[in-house]
Amino acid sequence: MAKNYGAQQRAQMQAPSNPLAIKTKKYGLEKNKYIAMCMRQLFANQWKWAFLPLALVGLNVFLNLSGTYKNYWIYIFLAIGVIGYILFWLIQFTGITQLAQYKQLFDKYRYEIDSRQIFMKISDKEGGVIKWDMILSAYKDKEAYVLEMGKYQFIYLPLAIFNNDNDRKLMDKIMRDKGLIN
Image 1 (cartoon, rainbow, N blue to C red):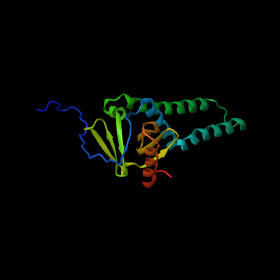
Image 2: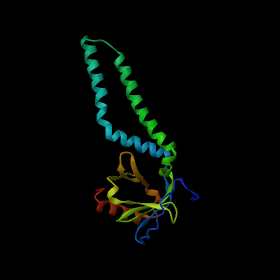
Image 3: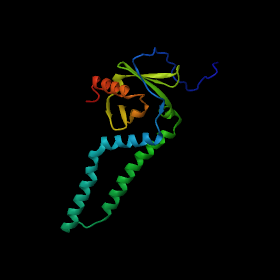
Image 4: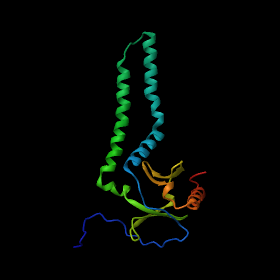
């Protein structure tokens, strides 16, 4: 029987290193940053639903002003509902940061990025490969590149982990060539 039988093991990858690849410093996603990014993605995807409570408030204001149906409980229930919905998702995203099976999201990786793939290295012998076709969308803000792979799945690459401006420019070029940014 193997010594580590049943234990979770990381994929052993020994891919040849591309000398022209962008090599970054080690970086581990902070748990608070993950929660903030997920909440940002949640609001970006579901902003349209904000009109439902606003419409109910508007309808209630109209009914109150016209004297047809005077009530104030709807304001309380709408506030509780909206706050409860936001807290529900906040608890879900916070829970992910506490679970053992999601620990690898917050490990420190060194990235080697080229036009074929993104190679995430834990050490010189351990890591994983992400092909560019797995990246659905991406954007660059003032502090990082965010590569989105699905709902609440992303790679966050702060600009500070790149070794120089040429690496950042090459990253911009690769992402433009892939059609991920303009």
